[in-house]
Length: 253
Image (cartoon, rainbow, N blue to C red; front, side, top):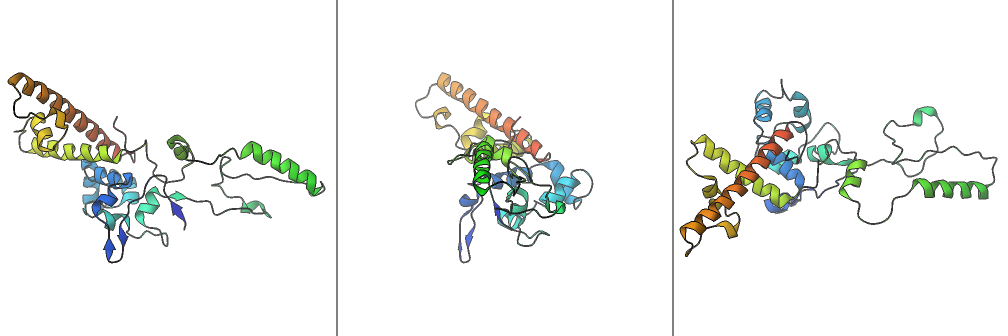
C-alpha cells in the first residue's frame, strides 16, 4: 500500500547505517508518541493491555511504554506492508488515475467530491464537443495549482487516520517536553526547586540567566522572566499531553 505523510516522517537510516535519534525528532510524529507516553490515563490503559478507558485509542496506538520509537513506529500491523506509524499518520492515496465505471458497485465510498471527478458522457456527441465540455468542466473542478500547499489545505484534504491539529514546531515541542519532565519530577520529590532554577538547569533563555556582575535587582528580574517562561512551557505541555488521550496533537489549549 502506497503511503505518504503531510509532515516530515521520521528517518531511521538503513541496515548498518542507522541515523541518530535527532533525525527521528525532526518529525512531529515522534513527538506525538513522546507526549502520549506522558499521559497517565493512556499508560494505565497500556497496563490493562488496552482494556477499559481509552481502549479505542489503544486499538490504534498500541502499547507505548517501550522507549524505542523506531520499534514502536515500524511494528507490523494487520495490513500487509503497512507499519504502525504509516497506519496512524500516513495519507491513504487513492489508487486511481482514470477508470471507466461499468457497474454501480464499482463506486467507492471513499471517493470525495474534492478528490475524484466522476462524470457521465453521451457517446452520441462528437469527440470534439466532448473534449471541449470535459476541458471546461476540468478547468472548473481541478483548481489545484502547482506549489506548496498550506497546512489548512493539507489538513482539509488529509486521509490520515490521525491528523496533526496544527503546524508542529518540533524544536518548541522538545523544550516543552523537557520542561514537563523536569517539573513533573520536581513535584514528585516535593518541589524543592523553583521554576527559575529548573529553567536555568535546562539551559533555557540565555538572556534570563543570571551572570557574574548582575546585582540583586537584575538577578530577581531575570528569575521572574525565567519562571514565567518555564510556567508557560509546563502549562502548554500539560495540555498537549492531556489532549493526546483524545487522539489530538499538538493542541496546547
